[in-house]
Image (cartoon, rainbow, N blue to C red; front, side, top):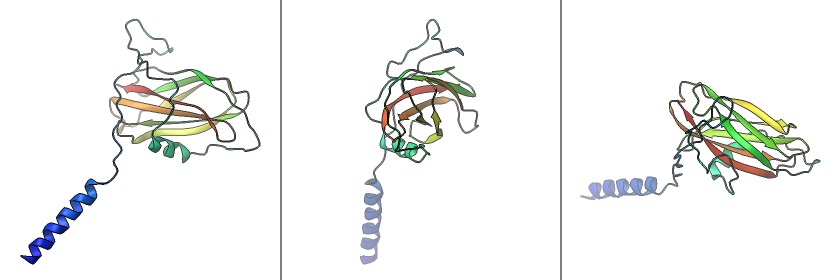
Length: 175
């Protein structure tokens, strides 16, 4: 009887401990903005008004991913800016998409982005320096592990001192 009580206590303890672990809830990707290969919204295309704008806060897990990138911080420079015209095209995509944005930064800045699944698993991401006011980069989504699904792109813009001056998200459909 004693042994069975110890076993039941052990099982209950393990279940309690594993059940109390902090789980990150999945994000909801309910739609995306359709764009053709030139970045235009085709007639009858879907528009997700929550995409490609400014977000007050990004998930902590996403911020941790971005903070692991080389953000090219240089504390001798300081400036601020904002971003506009952020979009991804073609959307839906097959092998990848172009991420396009404009910024008012007068000096060098860093952009970091990460593509995640609904469970916030990172699929693709990087950071790079830019001085351009209008930039387009290709994001490769051709890996066989990236199946047909909806993905979320989180982005952050940093000044040279590491201050975030713009951040947000947009959704991509891979077909």
